[in-house]
Amino acid sequence: MARQMRPKLVFAGPTLSQGEVLEVLEAICLPPAVQGSIIAAVQHFDPSAIVIIDGGFQSEPAVRHKEILWAIAKGVPVIGAASMGALRAAELFPYMQGVGLIYRWYRRFAFAPDDAVAVLHGPWEVNSAPITHALIDLRMTVRGACRRAIISAEYRTRLERAAQALN
Image (cartoon, rainbow, N blue to C red; front, side, top):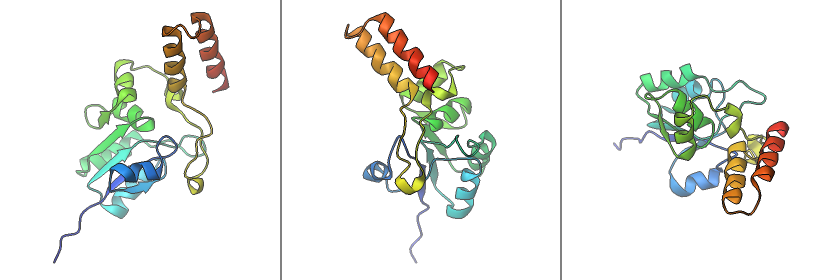
């Protein structure tokens, strides 16, 4: 009798689509993590690992720290990157593993604002299509443009302030 493999779970969308996930990892793709998602997923799937990329925050409470710690205590590694995953991984270091530039940024700047990675998006039924861009992406883009003398420092500051006001 063949032993059934425990699945890997990925909570993603809008910053990473289901298709992009499945190009690099055999996994079950789930909508952005919200309060209760991790507990329900562990109970339903008995996963070998959980990756949190995106999380909801608009219409439902955000994924809670305690449920991530609960999954880790159950022996399920939880990895975070990119958006909500990077934020939670930085907050839960050293228990939750984080990867990527945004994770490292949150580890370095402990009081960085949560809204820097927020991306408004449509429902899961339309693949959580992004409606906005993360402020951190805009900041990195305009700062790069300023370094290359494409825009002035004054204009960079004005763009960053305008984006922050809209967020």
